Image (cartoon, rainbow, N blue to C red; front, side, top):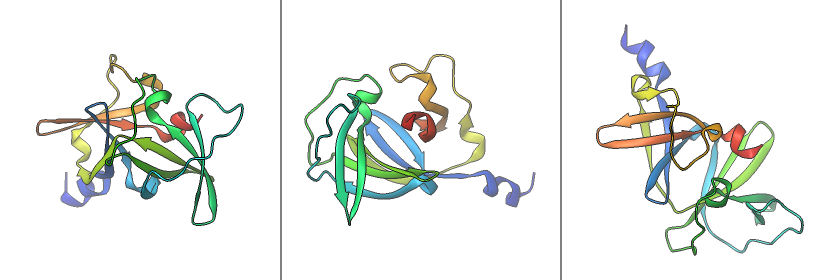
Length: 146
């Protein structure tokens, strides 16, 4: 296998945390990472939809990933971030405990989703990546937004 073939399949991701676990979302789907601003509640929205934010003139729905994944909710801290992510024509804010870093994941480090993933519903996961001592859960944004 030549070097150009491997780099083509490498995945650049934003790494974020939920309850001490690390998750990743492709950089190509991330528009920006914001501090938590005022979230306006929306009546009759699904429980995991925290409301909407006005971000530079664009009203964006905000999903709390903890409640989306049936994890215990927690007060927002200085580290809490809203990852503005998009899929197709839809843009959404994802509330996460912290957004850590940007990583390149080599294609060979990515495995398809294991049978037992743990706390997060397997539907939301496109795979896992093993990097040194880290295990990153790769999110399937399409499924999260469904």
